[in-house]
Length: 174
Image 1: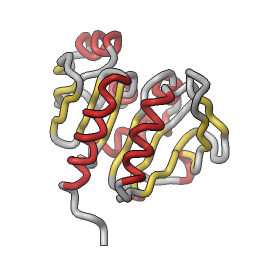
Image 2: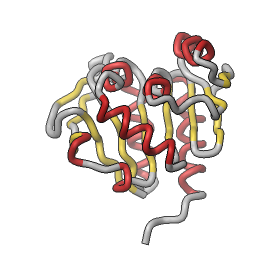
Image 3: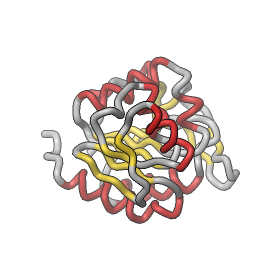
């Protein structure tokens, strides 16, 4: 499966690298999508670097079967850009798998794609989602139809397991 990874500055190192590596190891093709193709991004812990493969203007949601939204400062930076918000919104509206961890659901909030899903997020983002009317629970991983969410780096193993399980249920493109 082709998986888009939306990534901006100050992403959380482990929330990007561990799911990215696990999805790739499982045979999925990952493309880092960001604001500027070729841009070098650094994680907020300074341990992981990533290069943006394609910009939002160079891709379409139809090019991918699933979406990964790592946390850290990245989702907040990306949600200030309409192209990023529209990209995420399109995955939710098409009921494609979306994997969002920690601060990742900030993009769902800005895209107005949170009301009909049960989800979790980082504790401060949980509060924002609740105030906006979302069905939020505080647990390590929540799977609700096409959406897999987790709270924090400690939840990554459960997040990866459920994300891979959801991808296994999607028929591959011919």
